[in-house]
Amino acid sequence: MFNCNIKRLISVLKQTDVFVPNESEINKIKNRLNMNNTFNKWILNNGTSYILEKKGSDGVKVWTSRESFYIPSYKVKSIDTSGAGDSFAGGLIYCLINNYSIKEAAAFSSACGAITTTFEGPHGVFTIDDITELMQNREEIL
Image (cartoon, rainbow, N blue to C red):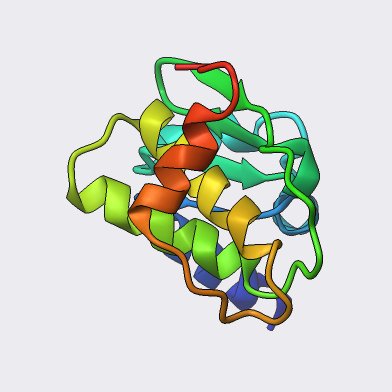
């Protein structure tokens, strides 16, 4: 059964175009597959275009087959982190379907996650203009 689960995990990973784990999730998968030092290279060589490792208030680390880079977090007055990961994912989907570069998408998604933490509960309401304003209020990193 153990090997079957590993085969299933490998099959799913090979079908993944955009992989968006947090640090804990990526470490569990690396350990499960016994690929601690080679996992990122392996997944990028097996069909994944982008890895975006969410690091919460420490930003996001991005890998592609050609580059890796870091997007620092946006400094906001955080009240509640509920929904931040979902907002990050929503921002990323928005950017990918609107043909943003991966660097622009990672920065925008990070801003979506950050602004969500400024509301109590996971259902804060904000607009693309709010995200753009947050992004412009710090020295641009792109």
